[in-house]
Length: 249
Image (cartoon, rainbow, N blue to C red):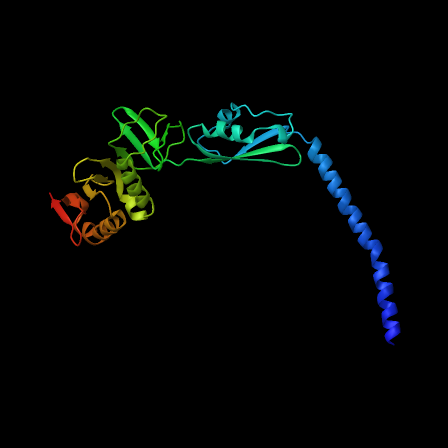
């Protein structure tokens, strides 16, 4: 019985070899075919995705060479050209085996509408100035206290860093986002001063600890203002720990 079992095992091993050889042959042909396809493939078409503020017309103004093998293309230079456009934060480039190049656009998001006299521009959380695109308005707070020009420069000073921190904290709260409409940076101890969407009540937030101060504002809004009425308030000072100082009409 032992000899018969060994004989059967040997037969099974022998019969499996044609299948293994076939699989290796198919794999080899696939590799060779892939290498041939890769060596002859050229970029023939370019498509874009992810863009909203940047029009496809503007994207097509960037010179992307076609009719070339991907190995002959400088993807870094192409990416840099796209990232020079105002709203383009990152451009991700990939090429499919059929020769189609896909360029995914990751855009900058405005966090405020910066008003400087008669000039109005958007600004993102890194202080990048962004032009207003007709027909693509964004519901963000109005910001005062910074220059709207020159467009190519970045608002990267300490003051804007404080404002950016505050604006991002506002965006994380539905109540604060809905009740605060305008923000100004002042060089005095008041720091960040905001106006409410209703009645333009002055809110003083200072220069830090914004998450706690916004929570205090939300609690005050829900517990006091909704009962007394916002029209009775002139200002709410949230800079002091453990207390809220108000001035009423």
